[in-house]
Image 1: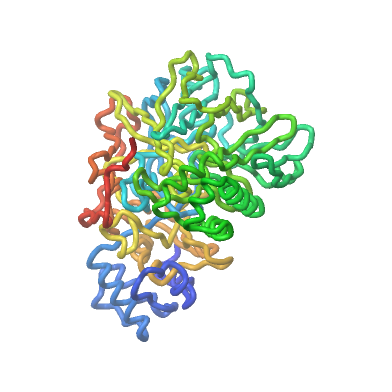
Image 2 (image 1 turned 90 degrees about the vertical axis):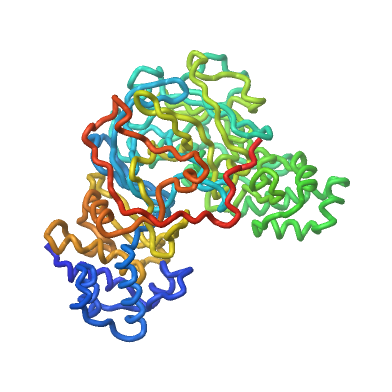
Length: 609
């Protein structure tokens, strides 16, 4: 057992002047500088609620820290938000899980539960995560920053057991559950991304009962770390890249494979290596200015060099709808030739997108990255089938252009469902969301979820679900984070580390250390252990973490607060389902958050047709 004093001390030992000014304090008016081990007694007494016995922190920084800490105790402060992935595997229902996305950018804690799940008319008993607490809403807001969260949850379409944990044939993702339950004959699904004004499209489950087109192309994949990776040419020939008639470059089969090119419908747009991105931008500008009529329109606001510079800087374009309209059909697609397997194209029409219908603000969905990431831009206007019927030889199958998604590629032509997502929601790199309806329980309860090929997760909000973050998050719908919560051992043990990692030696900010001090109080009662390991907090179970939050932290908002304002919030009601398990699951009882303050210009109407 490590004493609370030491637990508080170790957290403070991670705090330096640099940490307090560079990590987690951005956007705060008063950011305390360094705290040291001698300050631990004060935080210990404060965390016990014994302010009258607490000593005083040294100096101005200490006084600020003490004042902020005392103020926070009076308000029962809150937690924060991250983004990446942990796992659950075949863990029994009722057990706790921690799930994070984007390397810790958003995190969620809850329980593994089971019930009847139905997707596209196929139903079976399956496991899912019932979220009780988190750092942010699931589903980025649309319209960006001034709209409600775009989903009620997330449904992973990768075969596995929640983010990479090894589980053999006993997989827990939804499609695997439908196959294991006999609703589908094999692990196959198809995305048809409609490129019409309304976007969206169709999602088909199961092996196709319709004949596949003659020009079908099959690309081998590998399944690793919760992602679908595109394999290299089977004959070791080059992978080549072109835009229209222009060669952009090539990679050896080995280099292509080692770069881990992946396809992920949970990621907006299209990322490509910087050298190819800059060449693509030059080709786009050349295509526009080579057309006399369109080039003349663009020349009223940009020179060719000026346009290239704006594109390379990812600038927004305002009040240029006529310019975009003439440019879109001129922009060639980005074509990838994978040896004998054939080629596929990210359509040039995905290069520009309007941030929301009628906004007349345009951005680009192609961005530079260290490797290829084929996000939602690959799906827009195309039909792609993910065939994992042979687990040793999975394939990504190109079935052709969307053409209004008129062909039903589902099993028995009875397992199709509508996809939603206008261009700005689907292609925006900060949103990147295709949604569809799924039902859970008996009788069924409807949820609008993101369909994500980049994860195995299926998670929705549970009763009492609340969001946590630092004091400056109170009453908002968005909160930066100072910590990330994981379950690295996949056994219900919390692993809490600083976020973001600014360098190779990250540390909790002073504000974050003060914020977490109440969390360390349970060690005083012998209920848990805390010790430093690579500047992280470990030895605390997720159940204890949630329990401490119920007692000591105030939420900054309810889960899906933005959807609640718009009347679209959906929370799973476990008591209303006769098939839900476990029956005795306790819902958390967090403190009430402050009244939600919608951001200026908040709009429930996405403007979608």
